[in-house]
Every structure is written in structure tokens, then in C-alpha cells.
Length: 416
Image (cartoon, rainbow, N blue to C red; front, top):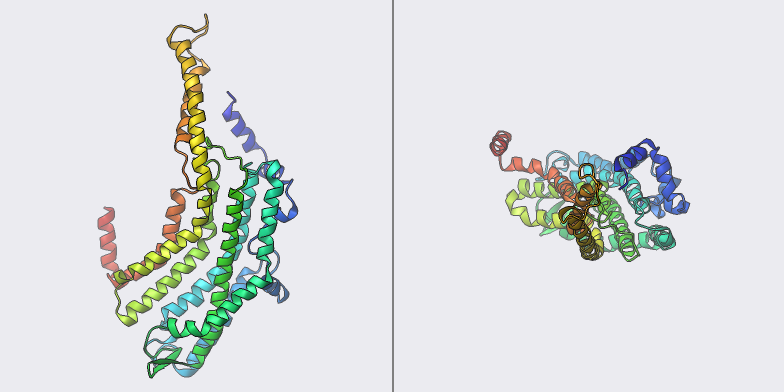
């Protein structure tokens, strides 16, 4: 058997960059620089106005400027109208839903484009770096990447997203600004909302900004899912005995951390929505279980759902590997029994120091791995990370049910 310790030491001693280039240098520059975020009409516009420097630099300034356009006029108009902290049932700065959407979720979605730019690029390149895409399959892989980039750059798609927002705007503001009382964005007259000047900016500028940024994220996740589906249909070099227990695809579970700004943004908006209903409509936190469950399922499907396209392949690999490794194991243990248990050992061969026993143990370990190949390319860590990202913004809402002291006492009782 090869000296695994020697191999590990040799690879650890080699520069990581040279190892990485040795497997991806045959890729085109377009594929090496793949990005789901660095492209499209909005990207080109931000380049021209100086809010973006290739590939995704100046993210802080970009997030601040866009957030100020959406939020600052609302602050000014509510100050002028006397609705910033009082004067109506829901003043501007006391509207948790609006603040969470514009001051937290919107910057998260803008800044998160850097994460999606870097993270998904690395995931794509790992298909080659881990030799899942073989040299003969590279042309097809490059074609899939090229198709994804053309879709990312589509002006028609982004204009279509904008059209959806504009067409649906009238219906949206009448049905979603649902708290039936006087607020900073409007008053209720004859059962209808009459928008204030701040309300008009909110409905026709701030919310469309937020919706457009969000829809672009959804569209890019669609491109990612489409890419994964196309890759899953290729002739992949999946290895059932890979230590990750997922035939080498376990790296895809890193998508949760890549999408963490996107996940947090959704949970923050949900927290603001629930906070408003608790404080201004008297609805208790447990009564929002359905909304929390729906958002949780949605985020699970958006983050991890696309990875299930590999499930049929992983199930096939496990079935085939159990059969082939089982046959190999039977052949080996039969030879082992004959040699060491039935007296057919060659004369003079010592038992102590023989490699046969270690090989038997290695074979048993490999057989255990292929028997337990998981049919989805993510693990418990991805699920835990997803749960934490969803729950974290909702934790402050527990203070609407218990005082901080009661909450700490309950937590201590659970832990100790």
C-alpha cells in the first residue's frame, strides 16, 4: 500500500497555489474568473457611475449610497411632517419592519454580492480541482459555464424583473401595507390608505429598490441551480470511497456560508414583520409559527434545494459501490482466511509486521464508507449553520414573551 503519511506531508509542503493552478490551468480565463454577481446591466451601470470597481470592490460605498437613497428621504420627510418618532400610531423610527428592510436587509443583500461572487466561483472551480470533471468532460463543463454567464448578462431578464416590480407595485402597496391605522407612510381614510409624501417615496422608490436587489439574488440562485442540474447530468468522476461520504461532492455544503447574507436578510425582514404585528396589533410570537415555518422552508429550498439534483447520482454510486466493494471484500477475505487461518501461509513469512492485516482493516473502512454514502451533498454542519442564520435575528423577539431576567433564568435551567 502507498505511504499515506508521506503523501500528506508532500502535499502539505508544496505551495497551495501551484497545486491549485496545476488542475485549473487548462480552463479558459472566462471559467477561471466565473462570477454570478460581476455582470449584467446594473453591474455595468454601477461601474459607469463609480460605485463599483471590478470585480466587486467599493462594496461599502455602494451599500451606503443605495441605502441612503432608499432611507434618508424617508427620515427627512417624516421629520418635516412630525411623524419621525411620534404623531401617529406607528412613527417612522418605530416601524421595525421598514427599518429592518432598509437599514439591515438591503445593505446585507448589496454587500452579500461579494460573498456570492467569491464563494460560488470557488465551488465551481472545485469541480475541476477535485477531478470530478475529467479532462474529457471539460468542453461540456465550459459550455455550461458560458451559458450561465450569458444568462447572467441578459439585459432582457433584468428589464423583465424591473417590469414585474412596476406592474405589481399598485397591487403590492394596497395589500402589503396591511396595518390598518395611521402610520408615518399614510393615514386610513374611508378604509383606504392615503399615502403621505414619505409614503410615496417608500412605495415607489424605497420598496422597488429593495425588491429589485432581492429579485436579482433570486435570479442568480436560479442560474446556480440550473448550472448544478446541468453538471449533474454530465459523466462525473464520483468516487464512492471518498472520505466526505458524498463521493467527493461534500464541498457543496459550503453554499450555506456563501449565502449567509441572503439568508440573514430574509430572517431580518421576518423579524421586523413579526415585531410590528406583536407591538401594534397584539399578536403573540407563538401565533407567527406559520410565517416562521414558511420562511424556514423557503430558505432551506433556496440554499440547499438545488444540491438535491445530485441525489440520484449519489444513490446510483452507493448501490454500485456496495456491489463492487462487496465482491472485492469477499475475494480478499477468502484469500486472507486461506493464508492465515487455514495454514496456507508461505513458509517463513512472519505474522508480526505483515501488511495483510492492515490491508484488511483498510478494506473494511472503505466498505463502511461506501455503505454509508449520503444521498445529498451537504452535512449536519450546513443544516446547523442555516438554522443559526434563521434563528439569530428572531431571538430578540423572545423578549416580548419574557423579561431578560426570565429568559436568562430559563436558559440556565436548560443548560445546567
